Image (tube, rainbow, N blue to C red; front, side, top):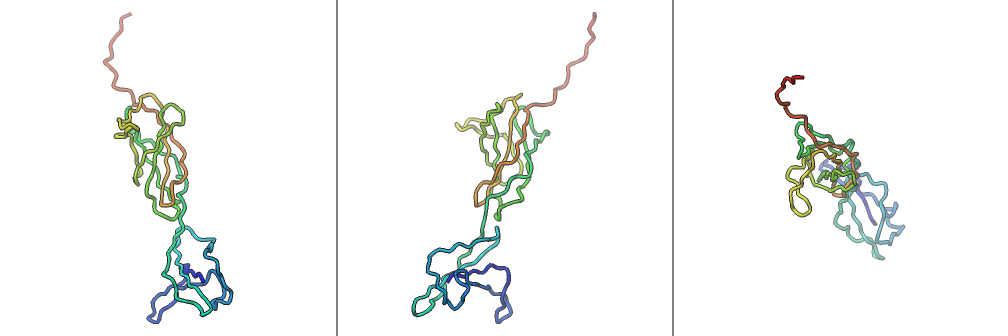
Length: 199
């Protein structure tokens, strides 16, 4: 007999405290007259992020034995899609380095976000994206990045780079955000001295 404590209500102990409340899953008959002999059971309609506790006991012709230790399970799923594309930070972006910021993914899948991953293309519009871990911060910059061979990553002024990102939790990596396109350029520099042209 497999039993579950779904944690939606609490019983009372003799001392007036809370106690777990287990209900049968493999049989609605707590006396065990309806036998369940399979070694697996599918528990459906679970709530993501909610904690469930299970225990099981076995019976033979002498009756039921002791309960197993409790097993705890919390359903998780991958994070949802980020709400918006990353945003350029013009005050920090230069002709050699891109700085972006992005939003936290609120649809966490029932588990904490453990990593954000930024995907950066090669600036040639060929969908050749490379993944770069950004930890759990909500900002990213290309300063200090290296290529696959370990050489510093060099961006080319005048190219338009595309960036998008994902969130990851214990269940895996979620879908990609919309992307942002950033032209690697700066404002013009200070003009030279004005001079009169004689015609």
